[in-house]
Image 1 (cartoon, rainbow, N blue to C red):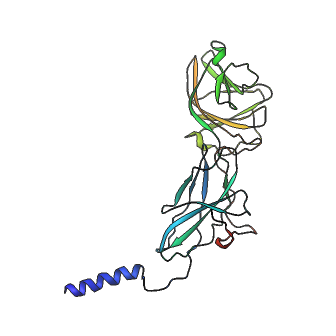
Image 2: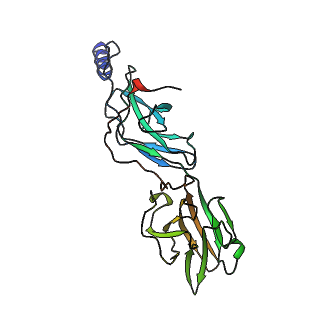
Image 3: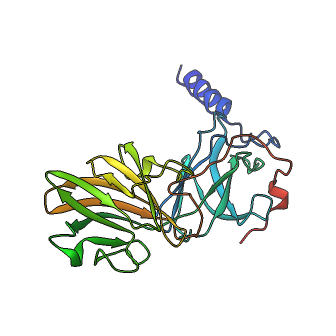
Length: 266
């Protein structure tokens, strides 16, 4: 009886993966790749492979979609964070899957890229009338300062119990409405900016700015009082680049599809 149970168990193990059979069939490429730009990092996720013999994934990066892809890491989970990404530099990503026998898939077909950018949390501005030296924010230096400084992008004011975010004439601002977090707004819009250069500051709302020197930024208001506003922010250091979170492009294929054979490893 014990022998029968042992043979049955061995059969089950071999049925999952038989080490005595040569497998030369690579897995299918991963799908559903998404890239989220962070501060000097890019967070990647994708759909887990449904093939039972897949044991891990390799993550690849290139400076262009049809360029040479270099492996930046591997993982057994359908997620990876590229901590080598740099703020303001767009990178294209692809993922391959490999199985027990070392067979590796082609690279994923999704067009995925991200441009990391700095972000900050809990910044505070004073009402510029009461505290003019701490009423303005300059995204290029990530700092609070004078509301009327030449580099100031945004300033705060309170009038009769209502609160406002103001910009100068050479800058634009738009209320994007309520968001659950700073990361909900992915791209800066092309149109819809306030002609008055002012918007009401509402806790939970995220606002996009187009700065005087052709950069994009966003702020999410956390709290307002008659004397102070607290907010989170993100700023795209790549000039004229509207990517504020991620841009994963349309799913699908392009004419060129890089394969493992065309890659250059580090």
